[in-house]
Image: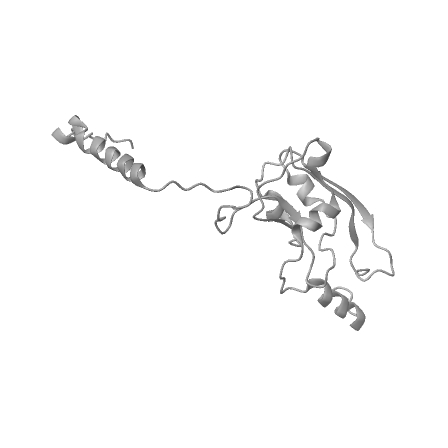
Length: 179
């Protein structure tokens, strides 16, 4: 049931706007006499608040192995279709041979990316992270497409306490392939 909310009438000081004008003048005078602060970007960079979502990157596990298993969930969920993955097989003699697949190619077009973070949220392996880097530049469109090597260079290694693939490999060696 809808009901009517009565609007309170403005007081005399609210109708004159004098307190609001004085508050605005106080703020202006405070900044007028304060010393100017100029940052020499890019040598000096502003502090980034925690939780900032910058450039998407690929990260490796603490053992230096690729965490991405090429499931392509990030590619499917990406609204501007900025992510392009080509799945590939992992050679049987590789250190991470117990993983089913790995990305043969992984490209993110930074001209299309909207930094929404859906790719990070949907990744089951926590392989893609939006880190605190916010400035990227290039002279051509091709330079703004980050390939797999560039994404790992930007991402590096993040601390990971899960060691999922180590546990899976140990279970496989014990004979429990469905760990």
